[in-house]
Length: 353
Ligand code: TXA
Ligand code: MG
Image (cartoon, rainbow, N blue to C red):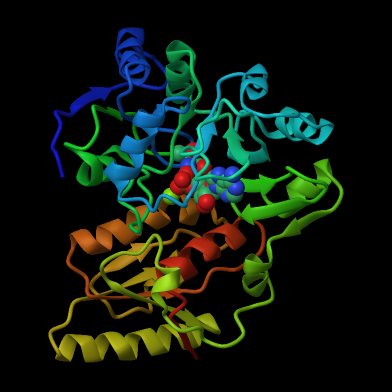
């Protein structure tokens, strides 16, 4: 692929250098690409109204052209430039959850190019909370289409380092704005017709959404996770997403039995000189006999696990791990979104104990 000069700009969210914001906004206005932090993950952004600029995003990521982008706005009124109609329920959700990690899908206006929505009649809209992201959108004066800043198929970038690893020489600017607070992409809800359907779970949970709106449903593809995975699904390529290079397996079952099983597997890998690692809750660390442990934090507070999940997958690759095992994640609240990503990353490869 054609290489371009990438400039790195370090910006402190709590002490924003507006000259750097202007420089990034200028690139967006001129049809270029900027990687910037949001509270969820880093995004790779372009002017959502500029077809050529949006095409560059697909190219830089190697993203299939049938996967639509999320359009980021700075103030609620920007929604009227994108959505054909703004129903009362959009106002209710925005009032409660914006700025923040919620993406709302509505019918699109004709002005939104088809490439941005991958040919759909709907558009996904989000108002991020991160101040750097907000400042760039405001200064650019246009909505910014931005998928997660990673090569398609790899774990989403949650820090500058991983954006840089994936997208250096493919974008004009990468902003170093530290580590993302949430670490998982936004919750996506489709309210473009009379139903309210969660398409992607995230930090904002179904229970929280239900408090704001009656009748919120999970998309049927998410239901299997909700009702426990029934049979080990085939590790079909169809599911490849967020995947590390390491072969990732989820060890399902009682944590003590899981620990025993993982120790057994790691022992065999060591005998075969195969580098292995474990994604492990801190409570079980001491019982594990493995040199490469990646912390999922405390099982009773999953915010650490969410924040560091993608980072852990990337770190495992950095260390050259070939076989990676993970404890299962409790599926309540935030755990539902974490499980969704972890199971996809593992291509649904499960070991039951
Ligand atoms: O937190 C986030 O949402 C991050 C940050 C950068 O804002 N962005 C992000 O974008 O995760 P991306 O492209 O990696 O994921 C967007 C998801 C995809 O699953 C896509 O299929 C879905 O949103 N999506 C976007 N527009 C849609 C639409 N009109 N209808 C249905 N799904 C849509
Ligand atoms: Mg993504």
